[in-house]
Image 1 (cartoon, one colour):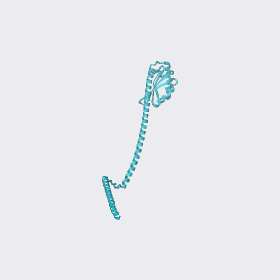
Image 2 (cartoon, helix red, strand yellow):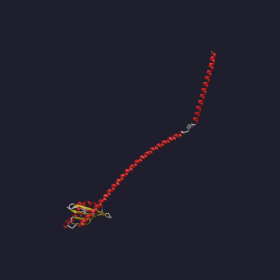
Image 3 (cartoon, one colour):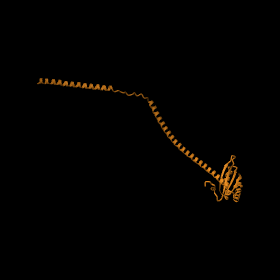
Image 4 (cartoon, helix red, strand yellow):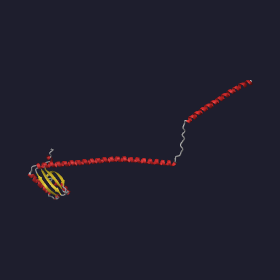
Length: 233
């Protein structure tokens, strides 16, 4: 029985040994293959080593200061742009106001020139109507006397008579003033002095090179109007 067991055990052990040896050999082969694959894969991978840390702390501080200065300059530049934009808006407003002011002044000048031209035209057609009138002796004599009486007062001592003539409804008086003061005094006082004889007057003044000035006055008879001599009516 022992002999039989011996003969059975030995082959079994041999078989087990063979199987174990074969399994270990197969495992070594598999490990070798994996190792070769790993080596092959690693051979294709480029390993990048980290750069050595050679940064100077002083360079970092200088860079930080430069960034801070740049930030301040950006703030200053932004503020300057805002101020420039505001100044531009202000300049535009000032320009618009100046343009409006110039436009207003031009309109005033144009209106004054138009009024002056109308006045000159008016004097011309009044003078033309005066020259075409016949003389009313009674009215002309009475009107001339009242005008002389006013001009002979001390108030108009610096105003001298050049010419005077009265016809049917109009009197034409031309005087000369020594200076601007006497011209102003005449312009204010004469209409009041003859207001009882004439209801309406119109005048035209011109300046002379020597500082004196001349005034031509047209006085119209009560009950009449200067528009009677307007050719447009």
